[in-house]
Structure formats: C-alpha cells, structure tokens
Length: 146
Image (cartoon, rainbow, N blue to C red; front, top):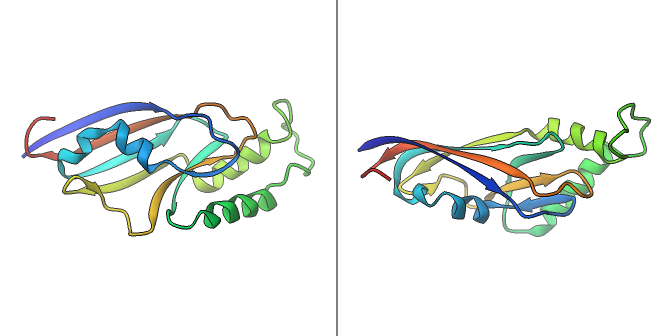
C-alpha cells in the first residue's frame, strides 16, 4: 500500500438558509477516495456563519426540523450587539458555533464509513450566504499512487 495525502478545494453552489445534504458534492470533488483502502476524510468549511454536521440523509423533514429548532435557539429578534452585517448574521455565528466547522469521516475500501442514514450536511445559517468553500483533505493508504 502507498500512503498519500490529497487536498482539494470545493466551492459549493449557493444554498438557501437551512440544512442541505452535500455528500454527493463532496464525493464528486474527490474521486481519489474510491482508491483509498483505509483512511480519513477531513471536511472543513471556510466560513463562520455556516457549518457542517453529519445528519439524517433519508427524510428531508429532518433538515426542515433542524432549521426550525436552530431558528428558535438563536432568533434574529434578540438584542444582538453585532448587527453591522444584518439581522441574520449574529444568529448565524451562534448556530455555526453549535455545530462546528469540520467533520472527520473514516474511509474503508473506497467508501465513507458513514452509517446507513448519515450524510454530510451543509448548515447554511444566512439568508444569502453565497457560495461556500470547503477544504477536503484525504489521508490514507492506496493500492497504487492516486
């Protein structure tokens, strides 16, 4: 086996506020993953008002319910001090702090070792967050040089 590091940048399309499954975007951006026998994929988002989580990938109601819950946890109506970037900005920072900026997912035999119902989810906390950027870092053992 050959040990190797691979790093790619992925610019996602713009998503509306809410929780969005992006596993397919990630897998298309790093096709070398299919040749990794054992490894780890690290996914990092380069923003402070959006975040990542590993979440339910089968029922879209889960994403809707998560968005509703997060809006209640950090409502725009609170008397926030940081308001220069709009009413949705400070609540977005709070929501991103709750979920985090990265995921580390084991890789085995060319596939992510996620559970049956798990998918990589972009948590877009702004009304107009724009195109979000991810850094994908794969480290692992490959049968041959990727």
